[in-house]
Amino acid sequence: MTRASCLFGVVALITGCSGLVSPDESRLDPDNATADGGRRDLGRPDGNTPDGSRPDGSDPDTGGEGDCTGDGDCNDSVDCTLDTCVDGFCQFTADDTRCVGDDPNPCTSGVFCDRTEGCRGIPRDCDDGIGCTEDRCEVAAGGCVYSDACEDGDTCDPALGCTGGECARDEDCSDGDACTDDRCVGRVCQRPVRACPPTGNPCQGSVCDSDSGDCVAVDVPNGTPCPDDGNLCTTGEACMDGFCLPRGNVPCGDSPGPCTTAVCDPTTGTCGARPVAAGAPCDDGDPCTTGTVCDGGGGCGNGAGCLDDGNPCTDEHCTGTGCISEDSPDGNPCPSSTGAAAGACCGGGCTDLSIDSANCGGCGIDCGDALCIGGVCAECEGDFDCPSAGSPCVEARCRSGFCEFEVTTGFCFIGGSCFADGMQNPANQCLACDPDITDREWTVRFMAPCSDGRWCTLVAGTPDPDNVGMDRCSNDGRCAGSNRGCGDSNQCTRDACNEDTNQCDHFNRDGACSTAGTSGVCCAPPTGGAAMCLPGLICPTGP
Image (cartoon, rainbow, N blue to C red; front, side):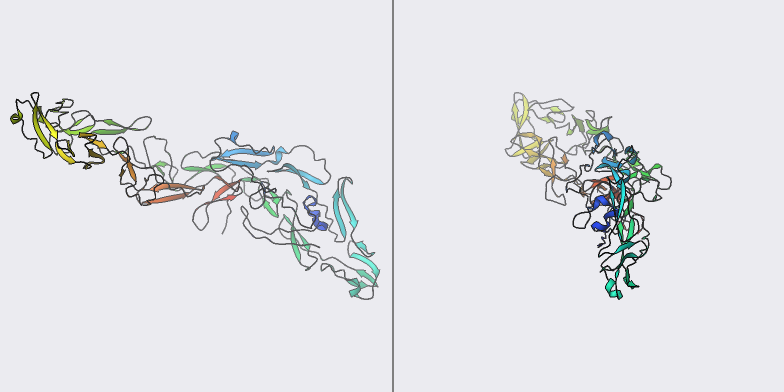
């Protein structure tokens, strides 16, 4: 009795039905029958079951995202597969040409490459089209064997089915099989079997269901060759679970550039470069550019050069290895913190030469503890010779012939101005007055919270999604943060942070991927949305 079930779903590229046959009809695949009348699932073209696992429940080791750098990193230990590294993913393609030699088994007709088990024979089809015979293949007999399957003393008639035995009416001839037309003719039972029309699917045969009398589709043996799909980028079309699927593709290698993907033209079978979407992040190979994106035409650019650190006395520029910051020449004019016209660069910082005791009248002229007045280290014979420093936090004293100043406890005297303990540099939030360390210079607020004004930086692990105060001061007095993580855990998108819109962008990508431990391809839904990794070699077409 034949039992069939229809399973609907998307497997790689197409959908369809697959049947289950009982032992008496397992002739369509004699190696595929189970004792309870069901069938083993021989798997997809890669030897795995429809959910991506192997028949024994394990996951094949084909790697994950970014698991290879060259073909040598890919080896599935199956002799008949072509192991290649495509866009950082291992891809294992069945190659029937590696299954060479004669097939000595009379119950198989040719060999094919199974991507998990290696070279396998295609079960021989022994169906003679006669419903009252038991069809099977026996190695000892050297091929197909046919025997009469009729019961109750009936004999098998190829045209009428099981006949024989005396009868008085049609009811005496009922065999309980909905697929036979049971008649009593001349006191002899005749049971012609209903003929089923072809399914139109080269990978499914049509048989009559004994319970319902309906014609149902039954899969032909896996590995049976089927018509070419017309796509010149696929090879080795064969039946797999009722579907005609390609088991190989034309290898196109790695992408020729950061903004192109190597793809095969299905109408010519030749490989070419397809531009990735405009705005996708890319690397232009220049160590001094950041934020480079694809222009939609295969080019990579539109990035920013070396960023200015905001210090008028440093020069940021590019070298052969990246961006560096160098001190401007001493003496270069700059706007000092006091606003004096005498502001000048000294040692990478801007100072007022008229009052800076460490650079009094010129860079490197150090008055020590003496006051710098008008760009000159002030001499004295007594306190009365020392003019007021002009600041409430400083008192002038004459020490060893020079005017010195003493800073009031709890203050810093920097660049001619007074700052209370904890006050920040008006020009740099990462510098502050800390008289416990020094009362004459700024102290770096190392690891103190700051804000660099950029949405795309965020210290890793912080709970603040808006990046308010979550950047940190570096040990050289700069405010910086770690890049905001924009990863969406989708291997088929390229992720980037957009400083203009304050959001994360995700761009679909083409190429190889890995799903459920098997090789796949990134495919974008025809209605739009994020690309996803589907098992198989090509993306589905049509609605």
